[in-house]
Amino acid sequence: MDDRHFFARTEKGRAELLGTAHALKQRQRQVLFLINDAIGVAELREKLPACQELDAILEHLWQEGYIGQVKRAGMPESEIGIGDALSLLAGSRLEAARQHALRVLADLAGEQSPAYARVRDASDAETFTQAIGYARKMLATIASAAQAAAFEAGVLAILNLPVSGHVPAASPNPNPARMNGIESAKMHALETIRALVGERSPVYARLNGAHNRAEFIEAVAAGRKVIAAVASSARASSFETEVLALLSDH
Image 1 (cartoon, rainbow, N blue to C red):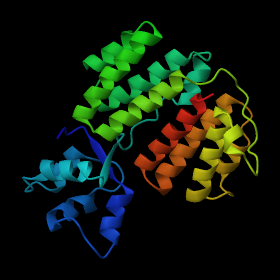
Image 2: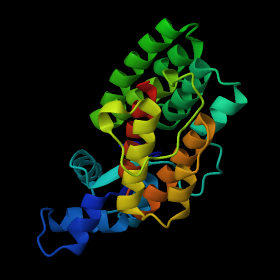
Image 3: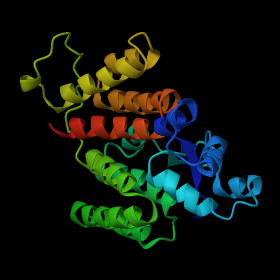
Image 4: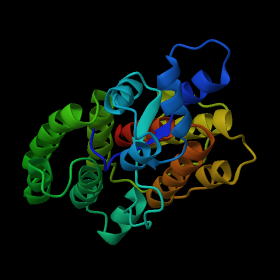
């Protein structure tokens, strides 16, 4: 297990600690208890110097969904959000998708990895898509199949964002059969935020009040951060991926 990896508990992990029925062994639960919000493998080794099976326990917790990999705790906020990338790069979907992909690859595989180089150097949409497929296979090996799939879906969703910048207000009684990609994405986002955070939350109002594509994407990024705080990083990531996938279906 790479000492540079950082993990946080998922909903399943919190349920294991808070519930009365336990699926994990005592030593596994001890490690899980120490993993709260973004703790590094190196720090866990310091806390449990006598735990020879730490790597195996972490791998088990990760594969079974009790913990998920996250960014470094206390790291300066240098992430280029999807909305920011679109704005800074004058709406270039290929370059916005490239920046998003490179950020993820830098975190999970490093800037010296072959996948990072392929994505960075791809000169057109076709070679870029091929590079993303290669990166997905690599991430499935060094991280997890779920993370690899979410990575590919998120990047391709950005690459295929609709040209139209208009985001209509959500209809109180939508007809799913007549909804386009933008309307579907907005409705799905609002339903998820309503269920997890509530209709009175600022992020719900921000999503509902988005007037164009850039505003909507920025609101989705804000929603991702809120969901990560109230639910889990995995749920937040799937929320963003699902919404952007619907947004591209236009």
